Length: 203
Image (tube, rainbow, N blue to C red):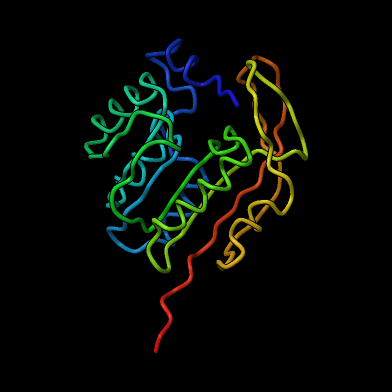
């Protein structure tokens, strides 16, 4: 799979492609978390959601393969006066110390091959605290538009729910988002998904 955004971040060192305000999805997830909770943001890009979570008082670890993206993210965090633990590398290969109250991704894990992400999601579930959350926004095959040469393994209906079969699904919505990053107005099919890990069994 191939994401074009590392190249785009290098091309636009002074401009935030996705803006500096948090996504609506991050705003939906934040109230569900315990105060001071620990968050892992996968494919954090230019850092807008990572910085938002940190500003809310959460402990945030954020990873992206793009050095240019992380450089923008660091700059945004500095401007907002917050601290984030930034990691540069392949999200599948990076070691994540500790456990998390939230594993989060917004437009990132559909760049992983299906067989890779099945194993990866299982690994991430093992790093999640009892009662913790996973929250993802992914591209689906309901509406496909290829831009900037990207190569995506699109999610199919029910795939995320199947990956979280033992978990409680709190929110699942399919839809479409509008985009014009390549200069042409178009849409992508998306699924937004939030699931909660099982709580410890009480004796």
